[in-house]
Image (tube, rainbow over all chains, first blue to last red):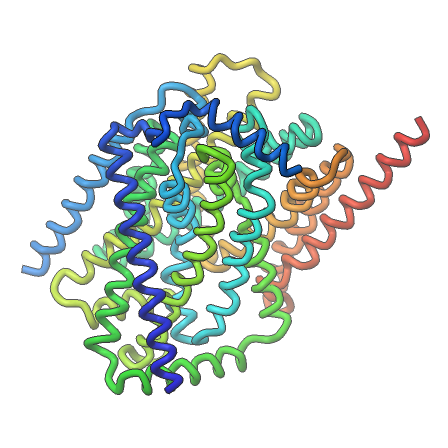
Length: 61
Length: 466
Protein backbone atom coordinates (compact mmCIF):
# COMPACT_ATOMS: atom_id res chain seq x y z
CA UNK A 1 0.00 0.00 0.00
CA UNK A 2 2.78 2.42 0.99
CA UNK A 3 4.55 1.55 -2.26
CA UNK A 4 1.53 2.61 -4.31
CA UNK A 5 1.25 5.89 -2.38
CA UNK A 6 4.95 6.67 -2.98
CA UNK A 7 4.71 5.84 -6.69
CA UNK A 8 1.59 8.01 -7.09
CA UNK A 9 3.38 10.95 -5.40
CA UNK A 10 6.43 10.45 -7.61
CA UNK A 11 4.29 10.36 -10.78
CA UNK A 12 2.42 13.53 -9.71
CA UNK A 13 5.76 15.27 -9.07
CA UNK A 14 7.09 14.18 -12.49
CA UNK A 15 3.93 15.42 -14.26
CA UNK A 16 4.10 18.74 -12.40
CA UNK A 17 7.70 19.21 -13.57
CA UNK A 18 6.75 18.38 -17.18
CA UNK A 19 3.80 20.83 -17.13
CA UNK A 20 6.09 23.55 -15.72
CA UNK A 21 8.54 22.91 -18.55
CA UNK A 22 5.77 23.21 -21.16
CA UNK A 23 4.44 26.43 -19.58
CA UNK A 24 7.88 28.05 -19.70
CA UNK A 25 8.34 26.80 -23.29
CA UNK A 26 5.10 28.59 -24.25
CA UNK A 27 6.32 31.84 -22.66
CA UNK A 28 9.65 31.42 -24.43
CA UNK A 29 7.94 31.08 -27.81
CA UNK A 30 5.93 34.25 -27.08
CA UNK A 31 9.11 36.11 -26.12
CA UNK A 32 11.18 35.11 -29.12
CA UNK A 33 8.31 35.63 -31.56
CA UNK A 34 8.44 39.33 -30.57
CA UNK A 35 12.22 39.37 -31.10
CA UNK A 36 12.93 39.17 -27.39
CA UNK A 37 11.08 42.37 -26.52
CA UNK A 38 9.11 40.67 -23.70
CA UNK A 39 5.78 42.45 -24.27
CA UNK A 40 3.45 43.53 -21.50
CA UNK A 41 -0.06 42.12 -21.97
CA UNK A 42 -1.59 45.37 -20.68
CA UNK A 43 0.66 47.59 -22.81
CA UNK A 44 2.12 49.21 -19.68
CA UNK A 45 5.59 50.69 -19.72
CA UNK A 46 8.17 49.46 -17.21
CA UNK A 47 7.93 52.78 -15.35
CA UNK A 48 4.13 52.54 -15.05
CA UNK A 49 4.41 49.03 -13.66
CA UNK A 50 7.09 50.05 -11.18
CA UNK A 51 5.08 53.05 -9.96
CA UNK A 52 1.95 50.93 -9.47
CA UNK A 53 3.94 48.38 -7.49
CA UNK A 54 5.72 50.95 -5.37
CA UNK A 55 2.41 52.53 -4.37
CA UNK A 56 1.04 49.07 -3.53
CA UNK A 57 4.03 48.34 -1.28
CA UNK A 58 3.73 51.75 0.43
CA UNK A 59 0.03 51.09 1.08
CA UNK A 60 0.75 47.71 2.67
CA UNK A 61 3.48 49.24 4.83
CA UNK B 1 23.60 4.16 -36.51
CA UNK B 2 23.85 5.18 -32.84
CA UNK B 3 26.56 7.71 -33.54
CA UNK B 4 24.60 9.23 -36.45
CA UNK B 5 21.55 9.63 -34.21
CA UNK B 6 23.70 11.11 -31.41
CA UNK B 7 25.30 13.65 -33.73
CA UNK B 8 21.85 14.56 -35.13
CA UNK B 9 20.49 15.17 -31.59
CA UNK B 10 23.47 17.33 -30.60
CA UNK B 11 23.48 19.33 -33.85
CA UNK B 12 19.71 19.97 -33.57
CA UNK B 13 20.16 21.15 -29.99
CA UNK B 14 23.00 23.53 -30.91
CA UNK B 15 21.03 24.94 -33.88
CA UNK B 16 17.91 25.59 -31.77
CA UNK B 17 19.97 27.13 -28.93
CA UNK B 18 21.74 29.40 -31.42
CA UNK B 19 18.39 30.47 -32.88
CA UNK B 20 17.00 31.22 -29.40
CA UNK B 21 20.13 33.19 -28.42
CA UNK B 22 19.98 35.13 -31.70
CA UNK B 23 16.32 35.98 -31.18
CA UNK B 24 17.16 37.24 -27.69
CA UNK B 25 19.22 39.91 -29.53
CA UNK B 26 22.27 41.84 -28.31
CA UNK B 27 21.93 44.25 -25.39
CA UNK B 28 22.16 47.88 -26.54
CA UNK B 29 22.47 49.57 -23.14
CA UNK B 30 23.75 48.64 -19.68
CA UNK B 31 20.23 48.56 -18.17
CA UNK B 32 19.33 45.96 -20.78
CA UNK B 33 22.54 44.00 -20.12
CA UNK B 34 22.07 44.02 -16.33
CA UNK B 35 18.27 44.02 -15.80
CA UNK B 36 16.69 43.14 -19.18
CA UNK B 37 14.94 46.57 -18.91
CA UNK B 38 13.01 45.29 -15.87
CA UNK B 39 10.44 43.68 -18.17
CA UNK B 40 10.54 39.94 -17.37
CA UNK B 41 7.14 38.19 -17.18
CA UNK B 42 6.32 35.57 -14.51
CA UNK B 43 6.94 32.45 -16.61
CA UNK B 44 10.43 33.62 -17.62
CA UNK B 45 11.37 34.75 -14.09
CA UNK B 46 10.25 31.38 -12.74
CA UNK B 47 11.87 29.36 -15.56
CA UNK B 48 15.13 31.25 -15.28
CA UNK B 49 15.26 30.96 -11.48
CA UNK B 50 14.57 27.23 -11.64
CA UNK B 51 17.05 26.73 -14.51
CA UNK B 52 19.73 28.55 -12.51
CA UNK B 53 19.30 26.57 -9.29
CA UNK B 54 18.86 23.22 -11.05
CA UNK B 55 22.55 22.87 -11.72
CA UNK B 56 24.58 19.66 -11.57
CA UNK B 57 24.23 19.69 -7.76
CA UNK B 58 20.44 19.47 -7.91
CA UNK B 59 20.37 16.91 -10.72
CA UNK B 60 23.43 14.60 -11.03
CA UNK B 61 24.30 14.81 -7.31
CA UNK B 62 20.68 14.49 -6.12
CA UNK B 63 20.17 11.32 -8.18
CA UNK B 64 23.38 9.97 -6.58
CA UNK B 65 22.18 10.91 -3.10
CA UNK B 66 18.79 9.28 -3.79
CA UNK B 67 20.69 6.11 -4.80
CA UNK B 68 22.64 6.04 -1.51
CA UNK B 69 20.43 7.83 1.01
CA UNK B 70 16.87 7.47 -0.35
CA UNK B 71 14.43 10.14 0.77
CA UNK B 72 16.84 11.64 3.34
CA UNK B 73 17.95 14.21 0.80
CA UNK B 74 14.37 15.01 -0.18
CA UNK B 75 13.81 16.10 3.43
CA UNK B 76 16.99 18.18 3.39
CA UNK B 77 16.08 19.66 0.00
CA UNK B 78 12.75 20.89 1.40
CA UNK B 79 14.76 23.44 3.39
CA UNK B 80 15.76 24.89 0.03
CA UNK B 81 12.11 25.01 -1.11
CA UNK B 82 11.18 26.79 2.12
CA UNK B 83 14.00 29.28 1.56
CA UNK B 84 12.70 30.18 -1.91
CA UNK B 85 9.16 30.65 -0.66
CA UNK B 86 10.34 32.80 2.29
CA UNK B 87 12.49 34.94 -0.03
CA UNK B 88 9.46 35.39 -2.30
CA UNK B 89 7.23 36.44 0.58
CA UNK B 90 9.63 38.56 2.61
CA UNK B 91 12.63 39.78 0.62
CA UNK B 92 12.16 39.81 -3.17
CA UNK B 93 9.34 42.41 -3.26
CA UNK B 94 11.34 44.80 -1.03
CA UNK B 95 14.38 44.33 -3.22
CA UNK B 96 12.39 44.94 -6.42
CA UNK B 97 10.84 48.08 -4.95
CA UNK B 98 14.26 49.81 -4.61
CA UNK B 99 14.83 52.45 -7.30
CA UNK B 100 17.89 52.41 -9.62
CA UNK B 101 19.07 49.14 -8.18
CA UNK B 102 21.00 46.77 -10.51
CA UNK B 103 22.62 44.40 -8.00
CA UNK B 104 22.60 43.26 -4.39
CA UNK B 105 25.62 45.50 -3.87
CA UNK B 106 23.46 48.42 -5.05
CA UNK B 107 20.79 47.45 -2.52
CA UNK B 108 23.39 47.24 0.25
CA UNK B 109 24.90 50.56 -0.91
CA UNK B 110 21.49 52.25 -0.72
CA UNK B 111 20.83 50.88 2.76
CA UNK B 112 24.36 51.36 4.22
CA UNK B 113 27.05 53.28 2.27
CA UNK B 114 29.48 53.09 -0.67
CA UNK B 115 32.14 51.10 1.24
CA UNK B 116 29.60 48.38 2.01
CA UNK B 117 28.54 48.33 -1.66
CA UNK B 118 32.13 47.85 -2.85
CA UNK B 119 32.79 45.06 -0.31
CA UNK B 120 29.52 43.35 -1.30
CA UNK B 121 30.58 43.70 -4.96
CA UNK B 122 33.97 42.09 -4.36
CA UNK B 123 32.34 39.17 -2.48
CA UNK B 124 29.68 38.81 -5.23
CA UNK B 125 32.28 38.68 -8.03
CA UNK B 126 34.45 36.13 -6.16
CA UNK B 127 31.49 33.87 -5.30
CA UNK B 128 30.11 34.05 -8.87
CA UNK B 129 33.55 33.21 -10.31
CA UNK B 130 34.06 30.17 -8.08
CA UNK B 131 30.49 28.95 -8.64
CA UNK B 132 31.08 29.34 -12.39
CA UNK B 133 34.23 27.20 -11.97
CA UNK B 134 32.12 24.49 -10.26
CA UNK B 135 29.67 24.56 -13.20
CA UNK B 136 32.52 24.41 -15.72
CA UNK B 137 33.92 21.42 -13.79
CA UNK B 138 30.53 19.69 -14.07
CA UNK B 139 30.45 20.46 -17.81
CA UNK B 140 33.90 18.91 -18.13
CA UNK B 141 32.75 15.74 -16.33
CA UNK B 142 29.74 15.37 -18.67
CA UNK B 143 31.46 16.11 -21.99
CA UNK B 144 34.57 14.09 -21.15
CA UNK B 145 32.46 11.10 -20.10
CA UNK B 146 30.18 11.15 -23.13
CA UNK B 147 32.58 12.08 -25.94
CA UNK B 148 35.85 11.11 -24.22
CA UNK B 149 37.27 14.56 -24.94
CA UNK B 150 40.31 15.68 -22.93
CA UNK B 151 39.22 17.65 -19.85
CA UNK B 152 40.64 21.00 -20.99
CA UNK B 153 38.81 20.91 -24.34
CA UNK B 154 35.50 20.09 -22.63
CA UNK B 155 35.95 23.13 -20.37
CA UNK B 156 36.75 25.36 -23.37
CA UNK B 157 33.64 24.17 -25.28
CA UNK B 158 31.18 24.62 -22.39
CA UNK B 159 32.62 27.91 -21.11
CA UNK B 160 33.26 29.28 -24.64
CA UNK B 161 29.72 28.73 -25.98
CA UNK B 162 28.09 30.06 -22.80
CA UNK B 163 30.37 33.13 -22.69
CA UNK B 164 29.60 33.94 -26.32
CA UNK B 165 25.86 34.48 -25.93
CA UNK B 166 26.09 35.91 -22.38
CA UNK B 167 28.65 38.53 -23.44
CA UNK B 168 26.48 39.93 -26.23
CA UNK B 169 22.95 39.38 -24.93
CA UNK B 170 23.45 40.04 -21.20
CA UNK B 171 20.64 39.14 -18.80
CA UNK B 172 17.99 38.98 -21.53
CA UNK B 173 19.93 36.32 -23.47
CA UNK B 174 20.69 34.50 -20.22
CA UNK B 175 17.00 34.42 -19.22
CA UNK B 176 15.70 33.42 -22.65
CA UNK B 177 18.28 30.66 -23.15
CA UNK B 178 17.61 29.57 -19.55
CA UNK B 179 13.92 29.19 -20.45
CA UNK B 180 14.86 27.02 -23.43
CA UNK B 181 17.26 24.90 -21.38
CA UNK B 182 14.74 24.63 -18.52
CA UNK B 183 12.07 23.39 -20.92
CA UNK B 184 14.52 20.79 -22.25
CA UNK B 185 15.49 19.22 -18.95
CA UNK B 186 12.15 19.77 -17.15
CA UNK B 187 10.44 17.71 -19.84
CA UNK B 188 13.13 15.13 -20.67
CA UNK B 189 14.33 14.04 -17.20
CA UNK B 190 10.84 13.34 -15.74
CA UNK B 191 9.95 11.46 -18.97
CA UNK B 192 13.03 9.35 -18.37
CA UNK B 193 11.85 8.73 -14.77
CA UNK B 194 8.42 7.61 -16.01
CA UNK B 195 10.14 5.42 -18.64
CA UNK B 196 12.23 3.73 -15.93
CA UNK B 197 9.21 3.25 -13.63
CA UNK B 198 7.08 1.73 -16.40
CA UNK B 199 9.59 -0.45 -18.26
CA UNK B 200 12.53 -1.18 -15.94
CA UNK B 201 11.19 -1.44 -12.40
CA UNK B 202 11.06 -5.20 -11.88
CA UNK B 203 8.72 -5.94 -8.98
CA UNK B 204 6.72 -2.71 -9.29
CA UNK B 205 5.68 -0.43 -6.46
CA UNK B 206 6.56 -2.96 -3.72
CA UNK B 207 10.20 -3.21 -4.80
CA UNK B 208 10.43 0.56 -5.18
CA UNK B 209 9.07 1.10 -1.65
CA UNK B 210 11.46 -1.51 -0.22
CA UNK B 211 14.46 0.08 -1.94
CA UNK B 212 13.33 3.52 -0.74
CA UNK B 213 13.04 2.36 2.87
CA UNK B 214 16.40 0.49 2.75
CA UNK B 215 18.21 3.47 1.22
CA UNK B 216 16.64 6.01 3.58
CA UNK B 217 17.51 3.86 6.62
CA UNK B 218 21.09 3.51 5.34
CA UNK B 219 21.21 7.27 4.75
CA UNK B 220 20.18 8.10 8.31
CA UNK B 221 22.64 5.48 9.59
CA UNK B 222 25.62 6.95 7.74
CA UNK B 223 24.86 10.67 8.33
CA UNK B 224 25.50 12.22 11.75
CA UNK B 225 22.97 14.57 13.35
CA UNK B 226 25.37 17.52 13.14
CA UNK B 227 25.91 16.79 9.44
CA UNK B 228 22.14 16.79 8.85
CA UNK B 229 21.78 20.09 10.77
CA UNK B 230 24.65 21.58 8.75
CA UNK B 231 23.11 20.40 5.46
CA UNK B 232 19.70 21.82 6.36
CA UNK B 233 21.38 25.14 7.28
CA UNK B 234 23.35 25.13 4.00
CA UNK B 235 20.22 24.42 1.91
CA UNK B 236 18.13 26.91 3.90
CA UNK B 237 20.61 29.79 3.77
CA UNK B 238 23.56 29.03 1.53
CA UNK B 239 22.08 29.84 -1.85
CA UNK B 240 19.72 32.54 -0.62
CA UNK B 241 19.67 35.45 -3.07
CA UNK B 242 23.05 34.71 -4.64
CA UNK B 243 23.70 37.35 -7.35
CA UNK B 244 21.89 35.62 -10.26
CA UNK B 245 18.70 35.18 -8.19
CA UNK B 246 18.84 38.77 -6.98
CA UNK B 247 19.23 39.94 -10.60
CA UNK B 248 16.04 38.07 -11.53
CA UNK B 249 14.18 39.56 -8.57
CA UNK B 250 15.31 43.02 -9.69
CA UNK B 251 14.56 42.39 -13.39
CA UNK B 252 10.96 41.24 -12.84
CA UNK B 253 8.29 43.38 -14.47
CA UNK B 254 6.52 44.05 -11.16
CA UNK B 255 7.04 43.37 -7.46
CA UNK B 256 4.18 40.87 -7.60
CA UNK B 257 5.95 38.92 -10.37
CA UNK B 258 9.16 39.02 -8.35
CA UNK B 259 7.36 37.54 -5.32
CA UNK B 260 5.38 34.92 -7.26
CA UNK B 261 8.44 33.87 -9.29
CA UNK B 262 10.29 32.87 -6.12
CA UNK B 263 7.24 31.18 -4.57
CA UNK B 264 6.64 29.13 -7.73
CA UNK B 265 10.33 28.25 -7.94
CA UNK B 266 10.13 27.00 -4.33
CA UNK B 267 7.09 24.82 -5.07
CA UNK B 268 8.73 23.52 -8.26
CA UNK B 269 11.87 22.53 -6.32
CA UNK B 270 9.82 20.15 -4.13
CA UNK B 271 8.56 18.28 -7.20
CA UNK B 272 12.02 18.37 -8.80
CA UNK B 273 13.79 16.92 -5.74
CA UNK B 274 11.13 14.21 -5.50
CA UNK B 275 11.69 13.26 -9.17
CA UNK B 276 15.52 13.23 -8.89
CA UNK B 277 15.57 11.22 -5.64
CA UNK B 278 13.04 8.77 -7.17
CA UNK B 279 15.36 8.32 -10.18
CA UNK B 280 18.20 7.48 -7.77
CA UNK B 281 16.05 5.00 -5.83
CA UNK B 282 14.80 3.28 -8.99
CA UNK B 283 18.45 2.97 -10.13
CA UNK B 284 19.20 0.75 -7.09
CA UNK B 285 17.59 -2.29 -8.71
CA UNK B 286 19.23 -1.58 -12.10
CA UNK B 287 22.87 -0.53 -11.66
CA UNK B 288 25.54 -2.15 -9.45
CA UNK B 289 25.81 -1.26 -5.77
CA UNK B 290 28.85 0.88 -4.97
CA UNK B 291 28.59 3.04 -8.10
CA UNK B 292 30.03 6.51 -7.44
CA UNK B 293 27.37 9.14 -6.67
CA UNK B 294 28.31 11.43 -9.56
CA UNK B 295 28.00 8.52 -12.04
CA UNK B 296 24.61 7.02 -11.04
CA UNK B 297 22.62 9.09 -13.55
CA UNK B 298 25.16 8.52 -16.33
CA UNK B 299 25.15 4.73 -15.81
CA UNK B 300 21.37 4.58 -15.47
CA UNK B 301 20.89 6.35 -18.80
CA UNK B 302 23.49 4.13 -20.46
CA UNK B 303 21.68 0.99 -19.31
CA UNK B 304 18.02 1.86 -19.77
CA UNK B 305 17.70 4.25 -22.69
CA UNK B 306 17.46 3.08 -26.30
CA UNK B 307 19.72 4.27 -29.15
CA UNK B 308 21.09 7.74 -28.74
CA UNK B 309 20.52 7.68 -25.00
CA UNK B 310 23.85 9.21 -24.26
CA UNK B 311 23.19 12.05 -26.70
CA UNK B 312 19.88 12.59 -24.97
CA UNK B 313 21.69 12.74 -21.64
CA UNK B 314 24.24 15.14 -23.09
CA UNK B 315 21.50 17.55 -24.18
CA UNK B 316 19.85 17.43 -20.77
CA UNK B 317 23.02 17.75 -18.70
CA UNK B 318 24.67 20.39 -20.86
CA UNK B 319 21.40 22.37 -20.53
CA UNK B 320 21.58 21.98 -16.77
CA UNK B 321 25.20 23.19 -16.65
CA UNK B 322 24.95 26.04 -19.19
CA UNK B 323 21.78 27.54 -17.72
CA UNK B 324 23.53 27.94 -14.36
CA UNK B 325 26.86 29.03 -15.86
CA UNK B 326 25.44 31.85 -18.02
CA UNK B 327 23.53 33.33 -15.08
CA UNK B 328 26.66 33.33 -12.91
CA UNK B 329 28.82 34.94 -15.60
CA UNK B 330 26.28 37.71 -16.18
CA UNK B 331 25.70 38.32 -12.45
CA UNK B 332 29.46 38.49 -11.77
CA UNK B 333 30.02 40.93 -14.65
CA UNK B 334 27.14 43.19 -13.60
CA UNK B 335 28.35 43.18 -9.96
CA UNK B 336 31.87 44.09 -11.12
CA UNK B 337 30.65 47.02 -13.23
CA UNK B 338 27.99 48.34 -10.89
CA UNK B 339 29.54 47.71 -7.46
CA UNK B 340 33.31 47.89 -8.02
CA UNK B 341 33.87 50.23 -10.99
CA UNK B 342 30.89 52.63 -10.94
CA UNK B 343 31.32 53.83 -7.32
CA UNK B 344 34.76 55.23 -8.27
CA UNK B 345 34.36 56.25 -11.93
CA UNK B 346 31.62 58.21 -13.69
CA UNK B 347 30.64 55.88 -16.54
CA UNK B 348 28.58 56.75 -19.63
CA UNK B 349 26.16 53.95 -20.55
CA UNK B 350 28.08 52.61 -23.56
CA UNK B 351 31.26 52.45 -21.45
CA UNK B 352 29.45 50.54 -18.66
CA UNK B 353 28.13 48.09 -21.27
CA UNK B 354 31.66 47.61 -22.66
CA UNK B 355 33.09 46.99 -19.17
CA UNK B 356 30.26 44.55 -18.40
CA UNK B 357 31.00 42.56 -21.56
CA UNK B 358 34.75 42.54 -20.92
CA UNK B 359 34.16 41.45 -17.32
CA UNK B 360 32.00 38.53 -18.57
CA UNK B 361 34.91 37.25 -20.65
CA UNK B 362 37.51 37.74 -17.89
CA UNK B 363 35.35 36.01 -15.24
CA UNK B 364 34.78 33.11 -17.67
CA UNK B 365 38.54 32.79 -18.26
CA UNK B 366 39.32 32.82 -14.52
CA UNK B 367 36.56 30.25 -13.87
CA UNK B 368 37.99 27.97 -16.57
CA UNK B 369 41.48 28.31 -15.05
CA UNK B 370 40.18 27.43 -11.55
CA UNK B 371 38.44 24.21 -12.71
CA UNK B 372 41.40 21.88 -11.81
CA UNK B 373 41.18 23.07 -8.18
CA UNK B 374 37.45 22.33 -7.72
CA UNK B 375 37.21 19.47 -5.16
CA UNK B 376 33.82 17.98 -6.22
CA UNK B 377 30.48 19.38 -7.34
CA UNK B 378 28.73 19.20 -3.95
CA UNK B 379 31.77 20.30 -1.90
CA UNK B 380 32.46 23.17 -4.30
CA UNK B 381 28.86 24.37 -3.99
CA UNK B 382 28.84 24.04 -0.19
CA UNK B 383 32.06 26.08 0.10
CA UNK B 384 30.50 28.91 -1.95
CA UNK B 385 27.25 28.74 0.04
CA UNK B 386 29.20 29.04 3.31
CA UNK B 387 31.01 32.19 2.20
CA UNK B 388 27.90 33.76 0.68
CA UNK B 389 25.54 33.05 3.59
CA UNK B 390 27.88 34.34 6.25
CA UNK B 391 29.29 37.30 4.31
CA UNK B 392 26.16 38.81 2.75
CA UNK B 393 22.89 37.52 4.17
CA UNK B 394 22.86 39.10 7.67
CA UNK B 395 23.74 42.55 6.32
CA UNK B 396 21.33 42.30 3.37
CA UNK B 397 18.26 40.90 5.10
CA UNK B 398 18.54 42.98 8.29
CA UNK B 399 19.29 46.05 6.16
CA UNK B 400 16.11 45.57 4.13
CA UNK B 401 13.96 45.21 7.24
CA UNK B 402 15.21 47.68 9.88
CA UNK B 403 14.58 51.44 9.66
CA UNK B 404 18.10 52.78 10.09
CA UNK B 405 20.85 50.26 9.25
CA UNK B 406 24.33 51.32 10.46
CA UNK B 407 27.21 51.13 7.92
CA UNK B 408 29.61 49.94 10.66
CA UNK B 409 27.34 46.95 11.32
CA UNK B 410 27.25 46.12 7.60
CA UNK B 411 31.02 46.32 7.13
CA UNK B 412 31.78 44.34 10.32
CA UNK B 413 29.23 41.63 9.47
CA UNK B 414 30.49 41.19 5.88
CA UNK B 415 34.17 41.32 6.90
CA UNK B 416 33.93 38.97 9.88
CA UNK B 417 31.60 36.59 8.02
CA UNK B 418 34.02 36.33 5.08
CA UNK B 419 37.14 35.89 7.26
CA UNK B 420 35.56 33.21 9.52
CA UNK B 421 34.17 31.33 6.50
CA UNK B 422 37.54 31.38 4.70
CA UNK B 423 39.40 30.24 7.86
CA UNK B 424 36.87 27.41 8.32
CA UNK B 425 37.35 26.34 4.68
CA UNK B 426 41.16 26.39 5.05
CA UNK B 427 40.85 24.28 8.23
CA UNK B 428 38.64 21.92 6.24
CA UNK B 429 41.48 21.20 3.82
CA UNK B 430 44.19 21.07 6.54
CA UNK B 431 42.18 18.86 8.96
CA UNK B 432 39.68 17.05 6.69
CA UNK B 433 38.94 14.34 9.26
CA UNK B 434 37.91 16.81 11.98
CA UNK B 435 35.40 19.04 10.16
CA UNK B 436 32.28 18.28 8.09
CA UNK B 437 31.83 20.48 5.01
CA UNK B 438 28.14 21.22 5.66
CA UNK B 439 28.73 22.09 9.33
CA UNK B 440 31.10 25.03 8.75
CA UNK B 441 28.25 27.31 7.73
CA UNK B 442 26.95 27.43 11.32
CA UNK B 443 29.96 29.07 13.10
CA UNK B 444 30.59 31.38 10.13
CA UNK B 445 26.99 32.61 10.07
CA UNK B 446 26.93 32.92 13.87
CA UNK B 447 30.11 35.06 13.81
CA UNK B 448 28.64 37.34 11.10
CA UNK B 449 25.42 37.85 13.05
CA UNK B 450 27.36 38.59 16.25
CA UNK B 451 29.57 41.08 14.38
CA UNK B 452 26.45 42.79 13.03
CA UNK B 453 24.94 43.17 16.50
CA UNK B 454 28.25 44.52 17.90
CA UNK B 455 28.64 46.98 14.99
CA UNK B 456 25.06 48.20 15.34
CA UNK B 457 25.49 48.66 19.10
CA UNK B 458 28.79 50.60 18.76
CA UNK B 459 27.36 52.84 16.02
CA UNK B 460 24.23 53.57 18.08
CA UNK B 461 26.33 54.53 21.16
CA UNK B 462 28.52 56.81 19.00
CA UNK B 463 25.45 58.55 17.58
CA UNK B 464 23.96 59.07 21.05
CA UNK B 465 27.21 60.65 22.31
CA UNK B 466 27.21 63.09 19.39
